Amino acid sequence: MNEPLTTEPPTPLDELLGLLDLERIEEDIFRGTTSQPVLVPRVFGGQVAAQALVAAGRTVPADRHAHSLHSYFLRPGDPAVPIVYTVDRIRDGYSFTTRRVVAVQHGQPIFHLSASFQTHEEGLEHQEPMPSAPDPLTLPTAAEMLPHYARHLGGQDVVERILEARGAVDLRYAEEPTFARVGEPREPKSQVWFRTNGKLADDPLLHICLATYVSDMTLLDSVLLAHGRGGWAIGDVVGASLDHAMWFHRPFRADEWLLYDQESPTSQGGRGLARGRIFTADGRLAVSVIQEGLIRVPRGR
Image 1 (cartoon, rainbow, N blue to C red):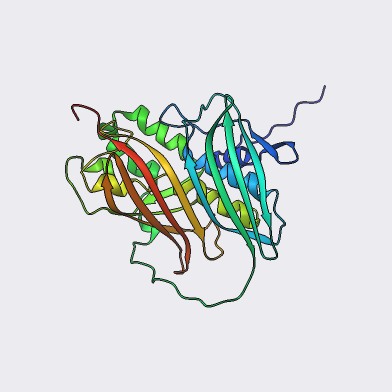
Image 2: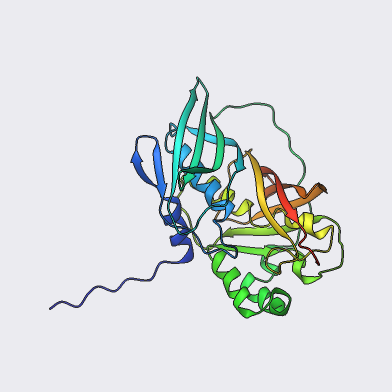
């Protein structure tokens, strides 16, 4: 009897790419059958946004690329059951295509996304300069940094869960993260460098979807910095993404270093607003992001 062929186990990036490879169950209906590991008992918002954009993009001609998305998180997602994505073909114009996507679980919408796609055009061009930031290769990886904060985070098991949840992405903090100096308000600005832990195919939609996935990881941290709060992992705030908007300005690769420059102009009414800019390593402004999140302080904290 022949010995079975051995195969390498899938990497975290392989698993994430599998997560984004939605099953088409009807012409404009798709299904995501698994969910990434998370620290809280709900589906990670970046996953839902990225999957919804995949669903929209699969109904759009290949020569049109996503230039913006606007979305609302309506209900917490259940990581134990599939998510069904229904695409509504709102408009197919001469140079623009618009799609609306509704994500459904347990018969109820949990997420709503509108995305616009455009054929390439030449036009006027300018951008803000890239802010200064340390070289990403001089910064510690998450696996090198997080164990030093195990006590702050509540133990090594929490560190391991964070590393598992972010295993597909090499994300490096330019400065100390929120949970490093709890109780010490700081300027509401933060920077991280990120890239996928492995090479990606050349499909532009894939790179945009991976950036969408990562964009929800750290954006609200800038809100917490203003108040000296450590974040969701240590439980001194309770929060969730409410809405999320992105504009894709210039081509980029998510498997090459990207600088995510983030800040918070305001928080009030149990909500915090954060905005971010994603730059390529050579200084091109690739993406703009704005998000509002629910941020509540538990009683006694």
